[in-house]
Image (cartoon, rainbow, N blue to C red; front, side, top):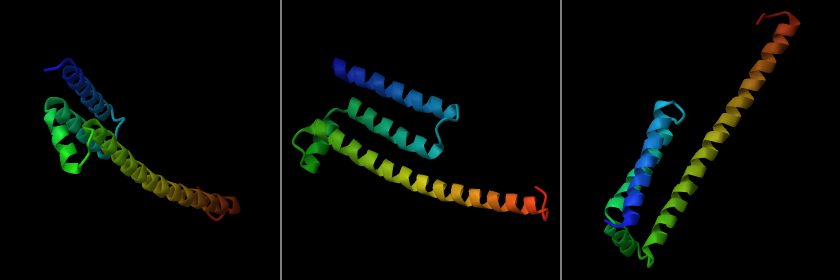
Length: 116
């Protein structure tokens, strides 16, 4: 095993441990922890089996194998940003609806027809 391979395995173990700690402390939602866990497993596979990256690069026609990692992560970040935009849009609509409902309730309570 090369020195860089050992460093990569240690970094992946630290990454997976960090994700597990965030899950236990409730700082990371389950849906996101699955994504980050899969990323850690993919890193681990590439760290343990170095030839896998070369085989994938050859399959996809990429001449410089490490650039395949950047292409993969660019794609994953793009998909993740789209997902976060959808979640943000839904939350924006929910906040707007809640603000309107609170305004209606305040209006009713100020007219004396309903006590909140």
